[in-house]
Image 1: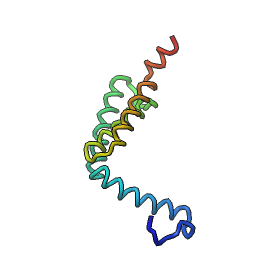
Image 2 (image 1 turned 180 degrees about the vertical axis):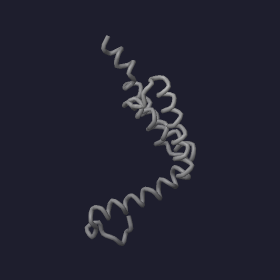
Image 3 (image 1 turned 135 degrees about the horizontal axis):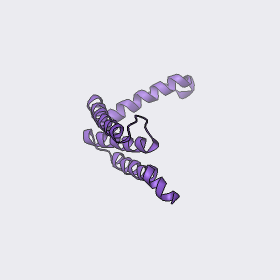
Image 4 (image 1 turned 60 degrees about the vertical axis):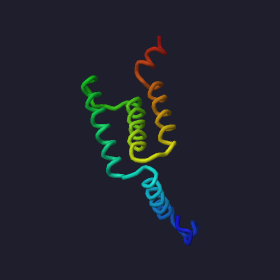
Length: 110
């Protein structure tokens, strides 16, 4: 945040917006070109959703799908910029996807 502005001088929305601007600048340096990265995420998610629909015959996403798709976000980010956080978070999302997979829940119930 701008060092000349004291947090006590700001309203909550102003502070949130200034912090968001700072985060966008930092993440842009860390994760690379935003539009290309988001484009890759859109491509990955589109293919994933298309295949999920084909297999299940429904468009509704499940918690498992969210974990898988968040891992794809980290994959795209690691393609356009290096941050160890991308790999750590990607592994974490993949582990959560294993836990949330519907077949895992069915095995636990047996």
